[in-house]
Image (cartoon, rainbow, N blue to C red; front, side, top):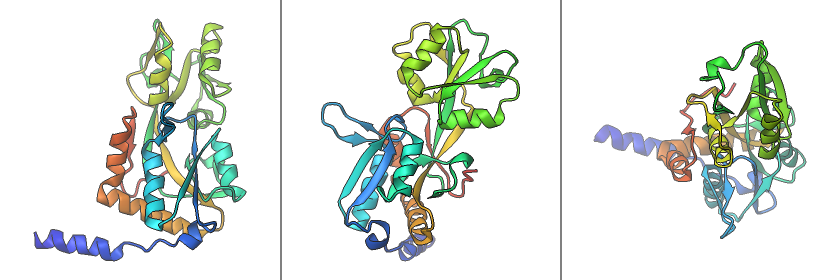
Length: 260
């Protein structure tokens, strides 16, 4: 009991004071998230409220800074990064990928989003282990994390990009242009509701590392964000946010997880 109490005091004493002037110089925390990624957040069509693990983290950070929050959707990972790089947003929720390094700084990983594939019901593909075979055409959305991963790792199968919308994936399946379409498990589960005759593979290819990006050359701001993630992980807030989201295939990342 004494040891637990001492550990709790240590965490509290090490808890950082978050600087609003550094992280949100306009007096409002401006955050952007990927609108097409339900693993991050979704907007309730009735109330207009944005819900999800990333939205909860943005609200918690704004609360600690004692600032109002402006949480905006963005069309693609590239536009999330662009908004931060141009100073139009203070933070952005985006998956780390080596191809995205350059104009922003990426935090430690706070969440893992499991990726898998949709295939036709009669497909011989039974597992993600069957994806990289000769003559297979494996698809993902242009610029999406799974597509970048496939571009780096496919050895035999051909990579076919979609325009990052479900209708284009459906069209390519119908035209027999692709044999499998990859994305996060929640997105694929949602797509399957309107795709009779298709199935989701039972296993996952890898977990996309979700991070919080800040502008390039802002080491103090990046350090604040990393300490914030440490805090919400240690307190259980992060794990609760992931659970509250109800999204399929999400995991809170453990401390020290290597996003690379």
